[in-house]
Image 1 (spheres, rainbow, N blue to C red):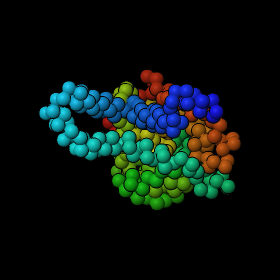
Image 2 (cartoon, rainbow, N blue to C red; image 1 turned 30 degrees about the vertical axis):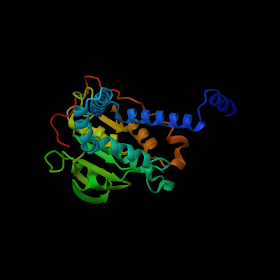
Image 3 (tube, rainbow, N blue to C red; image 1 turned 135 degrees about the vertical axis):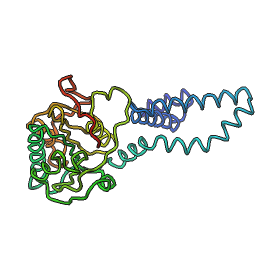
Image 4 (cartoon, rainbow, N blue to C red; image 1 turned 60 degrees about the horizontal axis):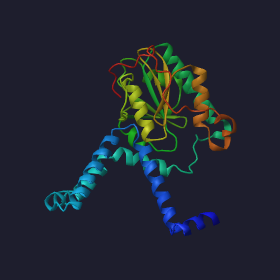
Length: 289
């Protein structure tokens, strides 16, 4: 700290100014990370170009052009809030989760292990039958608003009920099932689709919905492909595909385990990118979620 103070004194820069610059750089970095890979990148570039034109007009004393841009600034701020609503919501949600404790109730009795095992077994059963399914497990972020888009179930979690809800021809088959703790809260739930840029052609609607809900919240989503029967797991906007029952169970252990029991379960690494999306894993076709 003394060396930093001496350096700041030599450069005649106040330590508070250095702190200000550092925090501003961190803020810009976090914003760029938040919008990385989404359509908001182009919108941000467009907004930066408009601002650059405004600065250019001020420098050249172009009064008409700068007046028009200045008059539209208020409307532009409101428009930016509307345009960047998903990114703002995602960022505030992440800030609100700082320091929170993740996990299912009843961890002392191994409740999360029972739920993880039951979900993995149910997904494997649906996979063998090639029955399309999308199961969303709530964690810290409440999904009550999502549940209201479907049909409230409020029933104990069971493999039999999951099989019935995803049965082909059943009215709720194409929606998502929302799991909270050891309870099925709702079925036929409508989820936001992933809005990122890049190649999403390899993903069916269920996979895109799983990416969308895990981008905006800390939920975990299990997807069973109706075309290939493969099992995928989404969290944090990333997707791992072609999992078997044991792999899915172990990953769910690590993701659902409370903080106080993570000495073993949370050692399971989570990849930072989509994996297993080879040509042999066909996406769901035309399913609405």
